[in-house]
Length: 78
Ligand SMILES: [Zn+2]
Image (cartoon, helix red, strand yellow):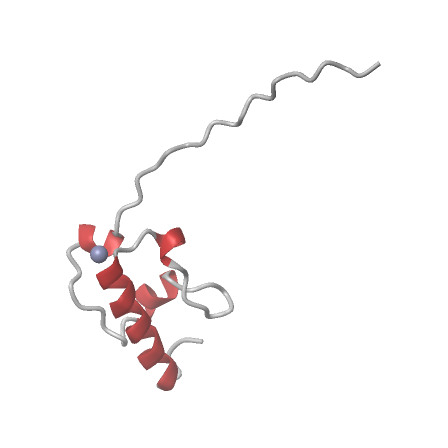
């Protein structure tokens, strides 16, 4: 006999509106010398965190990626 399958309740997703922190703090230009800021948007291995995780807007993500790459050349970050 097969057990009657119970309808499985789906775990409710916590909906959280992600906002761009940089927009909130009114940071318009990301300086590549700002190591503390850049490191916040990197993994431990030094990779740039994707937008789906950080919630950055397109513009800021682009700026950030550029800043990270510049900082890498100067060996400020990984
Ligand atoms: Zn933004």
